[in-house]
Length: 122
Image (cartoon, rainbow, N blue to C red; front, side, top):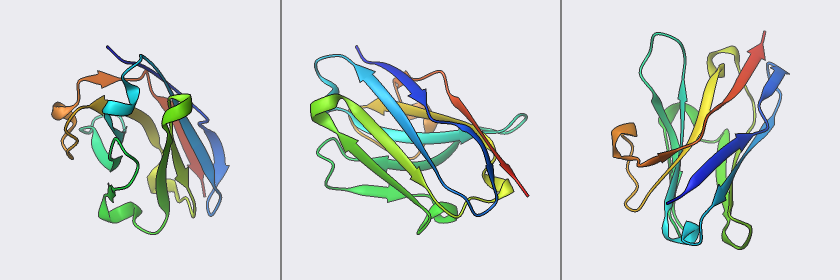
């Protein structure tokens, strides 16, 4: 069992940066692949990126490549989403999620945080 809590969201101007954090509880956190997703009202949850349990591999959605980076700290049960060059289209609730196998579909993920709101003003 893994419990996830996101933090770090807020209001930022276009072109700015934010770092989202996801704190995990559970002794087996390091076994899980961690994904980040986002959602806006009326739309399906959208894949942002994923990082392998070892931290050595990651994959990103095309719309964030070069702007967002995921990192993790298994010793402290945490994963991070570093977001740069934000634009208003990045406004959404951001979620971290965990599963053993990774993937880009939100339906593949077993555990979810409550989400943190990111708002980018123009």
